[in-house]
Each structure stands twice: as structure tokens, then as C-alpha cells.
Image (cartoon, rainbow, N blue to C red; front, side, top):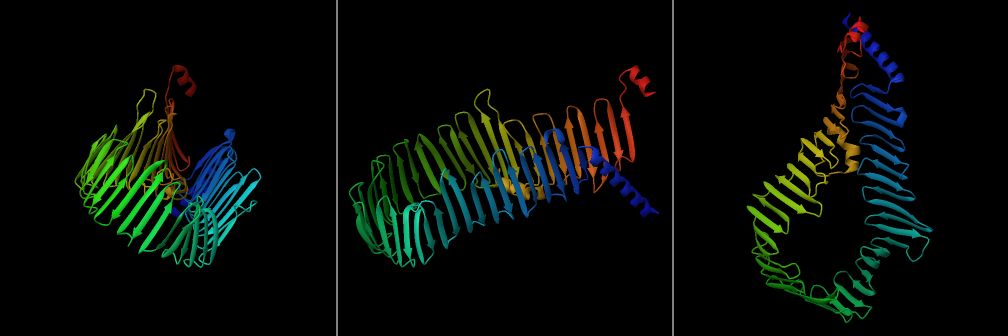
Length: 474
């Protein structure tokens, strides 16, 4: 008898919700299924199977996904599409005519269109590098370690190799570095450069304009370099580990038996620093002030910027000063607790604050005054504002979510809408659903309504405002 009653109850509730779905804008069945529609605004919001399925439509912006397998997002206004497949294993991005595709950063494909110029890059790191375009000057191909002829890659104008490391040639700013059995044998040509090396025994490189005189003997025990850098003469000499010195018009840095003692003089910014030894003890004086005795304490000040720690990693802080804001950051036990504040320096500025207690919760209040609280918070403290993490994974561990917007609306969700509440302008709605509606409470200034089992049992409390209302009720 009890089983028959339960079956009749479930069928009644499902029928009532299906009819509700046909005529209303919202259906809530807890973690099983949630539907919300705004027909006048062309907006829909659907979630199903707890955190697994999501569909959102907001005008010309659409996104849907079956987490964590894939997530799709399309914005017609921006002409942009993003697809994540088992993020970060594979991803696809399209912005207008430009496209990017990667498989775990190992296989990558890029296409770029600029007016009449077309460029396509296909790489399988670190074995295959290729570029194809409608300009032969930009095309290249490399199959490592057999053969390669790269252009404008890895901060070089050109890189050639054959049976690497048997032969390697790099070109930059007209200079050519030739290597045989890299890095042991090499010689330099082009743009007035001369020199060779038999590493690590001896090598030199010279150039007149801009001036360069580079030499080593039994590298790294003796290294000497003099060069012209941005119209400044810079010299460096090292007798490792006994002595080294870097000298220019702006900086002089000397070290003796590094890291036991070093002295740094920043002539441009007006401060001197002594490390003895680095990084355990530091003393800085001048326009920048610092005392450090690692790991016990450190204090540093430069203008209005401050940072330091006490019993690292127990507590550390940093205060950064900008034209309109000060940003205060406090850390306890490295990342277990973080408190970050943006403090405005003018009357019209807006503050913000973020608190993370890993892995329990995150609190975020943005500059507009919107407030967000999440529990649990597994990756958010480390990958702040990482959209793919939020789209693909955050919903799995977000057991509690609370949003309070500047519009006055406040929503709360527990266990993927098993419990859901909404407050706005004195009105309140609470729903508890576990596969079907268990309980609903709604309130406005004139009425309170309690519903059980999808409305099978309903109780109303009506506030009588006047004798006219009382006559109407009678």
C-alpha cells in the first residue's frame, strides 16, 4: 500500500511539473534538472544531472557543455567561438577568421588572416615546426633533429640545423653563429663579427659597431664581456667563484665568494644592497629600504610600496601603490589563507576584496559591489579568474554558492540546486528539491505560501490590509 501511494505521489508531482514547464518560466527539480527562461529577453538557463550538463542562452551568446568532457561557447557579437575538450587536453578558439587548435600544447595549429595575408602554423613539439603562407619569405619547415630552416622563431631571425647537434646555425641582427657538434665548436661571422669557441676551454667574440668584446677561459671559471647596450657601456668580469663584477653607468654589482657576500649599487634609482649571504641576510639603504633575515622576518619599502614576511611562510604581506588604488595582499602559510584588497585613493573610487581559505571557500566582492561566496574552492585560489577552470571543473566542488548583486538580488544554491533561494525587493522564494519538489516557500509583502510535494499540500497566510480586503476574503 505504501509503495502504491509513493508511486501515485511521484506521478502526480511529475505531471504537475510538466504542465508547469509548458506554461511557466522556471522548473526546479534540484540536482536532476533545472530550467529557467526569459522569453522577452531571449534568455535560457538549463542545468541537469548536478554539475554535469549546462546550457545557457543570452541573446547572441550561447554556451553549453557536458563537464568535464567538453564545453562550447559562442558569441555572435564578438564573432568568437571557444571549445574545451577534456581541458587542458585539447582546445579550439576562433576569433573572426583566426583559429587556434591544440592538443595538450604538444600539437598546435594556428591560422591568421590579415587583409590579403594568410599564415598557417602547424607544430608537433619538439619534433615538427612548419609555417605556410602566401609569402615565401615567411614560410619555414623543420623536422627535428634531421633538418630545419626556421624564421623568426625562438627570438632568432633564422635557425638552421642538420642532424642536430652536428650542425646548427643561428642568425640575429645580421650576425651568424655557426656551431659544429653544438655546443662544443663554433665560429661567428657577419656584420663585422669575428670569433670562435672550443667550449669549455676557450672562446672569444668581437665586434666594432656596436662594440663587443666577449671572452671565456675554462668556462665558467673566467668570463669577461664588454659591450655597448642601448648607448651605454657595460662590462662584466667573473673569476668564479671568487669574484665577479657588473658595471655600467647605472649599476655596479660586485660579489665575493658568491653567494656569501655581494654588494649591489643602483645608481639610477638611488639605493645600495648588501647580501651576506644571499638570500639569508639582506640590508638595503637609500630610496629603497630593506632588512631581511630569512626565514625569521623581512621588511622592504620603496616609496609607498611595502612588502615583507614574519616566520616565512607563516605570514607575508605586500602593499602596492598605484595612481588611483592601493592593493593590499596578505598571505598565511603561503596559500592556505589569502586576503587581497583594492583600496581607492579618491572619493569616487570603488573598493574590492577577495578572501580565499583553501580548500574551503572563496569570497569575492568586486568594484561594482557584487558579492560572491563559494564552498568548496579547490583551484580558484591558485588560478584566479581562469575561465576554462570555472567552465569545466568548478561546478563539481561548488557545494554552496551565494551571490548578492548591486541590484539587490540575492541567490543561494546548495548541492546543485537541491536547496535554492532568491531574494529581491522584499520578496523571497525558497525551494528544496530532491529529484522532485519537496518544499517551496514564497513571500511578498502581502502573502506567505507554503507548498509541499509540488503543491499537493498548500498553506497560505494572507496579510489583511484593510476592511475592504477582509470583505473580499469573506
